[in-house]
Image (tube, rainbow, N blue to C red):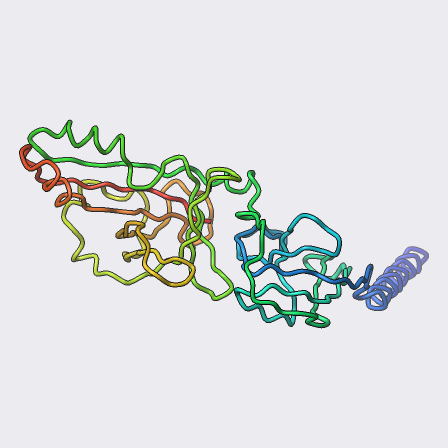
Length: 296
């Protein structure tokens, strides 16, 4: 009998404790831990940068901003309510609110809201950094893997040429991201002072059955999920002198991730006609180059 009474008292205590704990959690809810207002200068163009959200780092276009009396530009991922127009430098008043809510997956976060647009001037902002991508982020993306195949009477001539003059630089890290306009962009980075792009990727679907036969000499190593064409435009949407590629999109055969999203692209270029014209006397039959590039 005493055992039953003791058990009942214990259960009542646990239920009461849980009720009080839940009630206290509901009372606490979302808290504002800090609030401030200040004026920002927003530069006339956005730049690629890395931001942290929902426990992950990811690459996107960010605002380039400078706080009052500050000398250096810095990155800001979001300003709620702000409608940015490229080519204009702004002075805006914003609020910065920090929250804490232990019921959320990300318990602490900060939100930036537009309070007022103080000025909007058409100009090119000066002394902007090329990007806001830390070294540790872009070095996680391996350098492109370069392969080629040659069929010719004197193929060593072409092989030497291919070794010495790759279509794309092999010592740059290549990154993909979407801009504020949702267009896919391509950005190559060697270090803080050496970059290529960004370029807007113009993509078109292609029929795999119509791909050049030469590509079969260098089959992709992973699982191919699509075949498209890529050409590259500048930020104004104009054609560039960057070469176009046929692209196989897929997943690396060595990937251990359960994420089904593509994580690699294979860039192909048939160079047969180019080398037939460059070296008409060496019996060129087929020349193809490919680049394996991981995508973030």
